[in-house]
Every structure is written in structure tokens, then in C-alpha cells.
Length: 111
Image 1: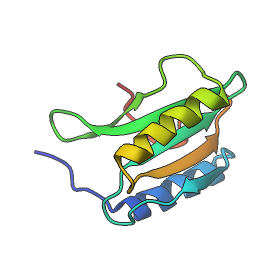
Image 2: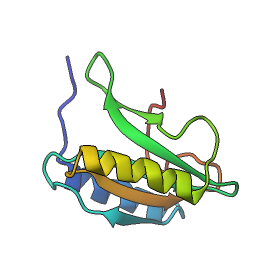
Image 3: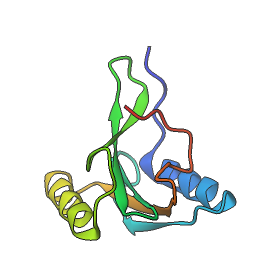
């Protein structure tokens, strides 16, 4: 059974509040559809960036994958990935967090 889905705008607000409360300040880089948009999370670490892409597991659970690969990348690589995804999905949200360890400030199953 899949978990209930939260509207994208509400989820983004929650993630930003969690990040700010934990000292991992975040910002909306691109607003997407408030109801059904997907979300990309940019983590800005000491050694570069990592972009997390939202997906659903076979069981319908929310999960995240490191869309730009297992290690940190530079700004240009992250920006190019985001631009490609926005072309594919114009409803996409993009949020960014300061994350020295490249871990998200919210509970996330990384696959």
C-alpha cells in the first residue's frame, strides 16, 4: 500500500523549515506546480554539489537518488542536469540547502 501523497508546495515548505531549524539553510531556486510538481534538492557541500531527485519505490514510498552521481559535482554539472530536467518537466520544484556533508536536512531514504 502506498503512503498518502503530500502536495509539492506543502512538502517544500516543510523541508525548508526543517533545514532552517537544523542550521542547514535552504531556498527555493525554482517554483513548480504547488499541487503535483516533482522536486529536485540541491545540496551544497564543502567539496561541491549533489542533486537529489525524488522518486517512488515499487511499494510507492518516497525515496531519493543522487541524480548527479555518488560524488560531488561542480556548479556547471548540477545546473546542466537541472536544466535538462526542467525541459522534461516544467512543473518541477528546485530547492537548495547548505549541506556540508551532502546529506539532506529532512528524513530521506537514499537509493
